[in-house]
Image (cartoon, rainbow, N blue to C red; front, side, top):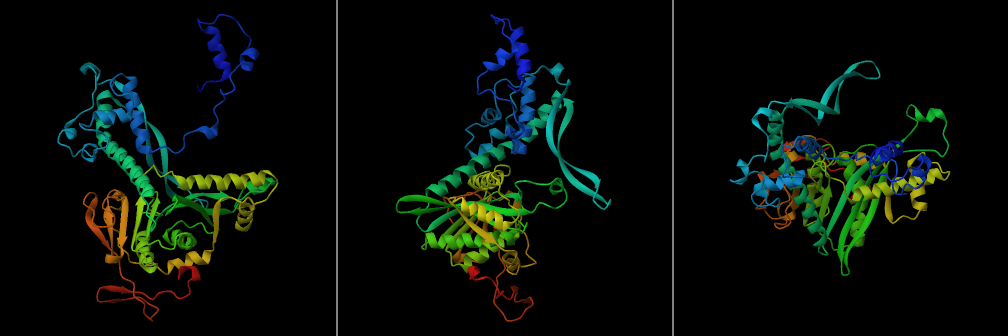
Length: 460
């Protein structure tokens, strides 16, 4: 399927089933129209590293005919479970039967020491020079070739399989919980799916060569998402995209981008008192102590009864928000292709507005993001096992704490979870108290912070 037409023509001539000779020109002419050349844009560039590495190992075992019963990694997981892949105990190797199972290998003892080579994605550090010729250390991701014996390959697969099965269960569970949360929304609840799209680089319809070098191209941050809410006629959705010339993607920027979205939310459904957020889980953006603090802070400030932030499993964060980003970029590129120039945030906003997209647009100033910095405390302590949690919940009855959950649980709602609560289950949020002093001080174990009075009106 990935060969060239010229090579396929040679294979055709060598085929024993060929009944007549045709020229290369005729072979190309009668080629079905749906058979096209592979393109660089058609590559799979969003693979999960755990899925990719496990596929490399199992493919090599299949190639060597060491594993014959399982045709895929999913079937292999099913064979390693005594019940099914929807059982958390089995997939987490907590089952008394499953934790003792081994790979169904078929290989003779004399072949166990034969050498094999397989691929793996791995993180490495390299020493490089920056633009000032100073030595720095950078992290790179490479596709490495690993040489080992069949025995070592089987052992490595078994060691990685336990982590992989946990990962697979988390992926399926989070997708199911988010789908159920969306379909079960009440009229006082909303679900907001958000994600940062890749920054848009400004373009001109016609450019000189120097534009390709240096810092001539400005970048624009795109924070995209979809809001789901319930009405008398069923579940409705509203798409949005906030744009900013600031390239910050930290919690302060996230909540600055969310402010106009929350204002739109109250306009569309004034009775809402429960807000759920969904995103992927990078620790530099959404899954960190600062974002947890901001969730509790604004949940109390806006008078919500309940709120939660839900994270997808690592490597599986693609969703509705990414589709909004794709529409925005394609629309902008199409305008440039038709002779338009997009050199700034104002140009991009005007182009998107003129296209009458069904996507609500918001512009976020740098000053709004800097105002959000004043809401954050500087000495927050991160909760334990941050990388393992997939849901944090807040409720007004216990406004000073967030519940941490290993996985999302809509059955327990916002009460203490009996299924996936982490240990410790609560993260105590420092209380903010309005005072007249400009500096912070400690009083009876509380952190007393002056609230900023120069916030934009949309924050009030």
